[in-house]
Length: 212
Image (cartoon, rainbow, N blue to C red; front, side, top):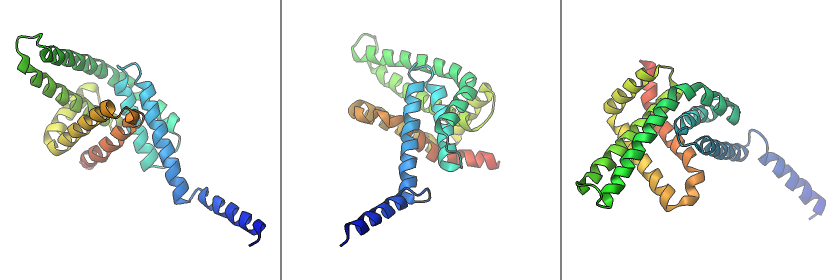
């Protein structure tokens, strides 16, 4: 078979793969966008107290990039980060501080430094509940414009009224924690995975509220 013919055929195949409407090209592009978004969330969470604004911006960007025609990852993320900073930073700081205190108390109980060592389960459960509530709040903040007080109230009522979704978010957080500690290599993808899985279940609740 003619070598020139084979080269032409290969070039034609490559052009098909990299056509904008080709499913393979579209999936590669989506994965790159997903990885880029995950890295952005990590970078903007580096100050710890900015975890809230970064995750909320990540949720907003994920919704725009994968469910609308938007394709500018950084532009969308940065816009949302600035918009949500004032509404989520305060809640983020308080939550991080309380979670740190609960974690320290849990460690003290583990080492027998407190009078009631069995209280470690109380601190553990309280920490998981608070983290789940915080996750719910950030997802809500990314999708709806309300005051901080209104969001806190709506998040609490939504978490109680939609208990199955709340329990799923709780399980997602626990799995994410163990993945980060047991398989550190997944750390780069975890922010994106957390956003994607949270979006999958929270949007079912949010769409119901949007219709109402």
